[in-house]
View 1 (tube, rainbow, N blue to C red):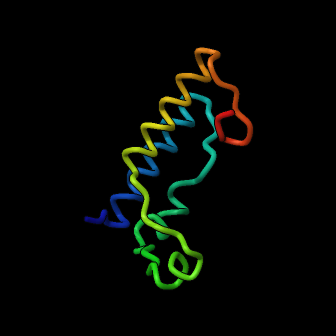
View 2 (view 1 turned 90 degrees about the vertical axis):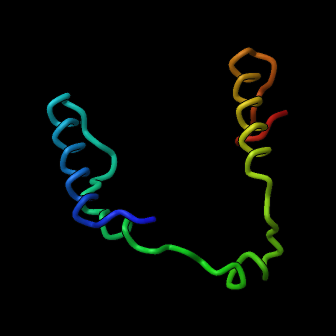
Length: 86
């Protein structure tokens, strides 16, 4: 599924207008990044993952571990160093 460049530009302009009205300065100009956001950025695994030995991961388990660590940090049960639990 993809979104048209025109729709991304319209959405970006709306966000920009809302940020300006609220007195906020957005980090990225989403209108300028419309070409990147609507391009197909698929990278074939054989070009990078396979030569580097990267394997598939269980994304659900990874998200669960991240949430658990975040809660433990907030509760003072874990300290972190560079995004890893200690």
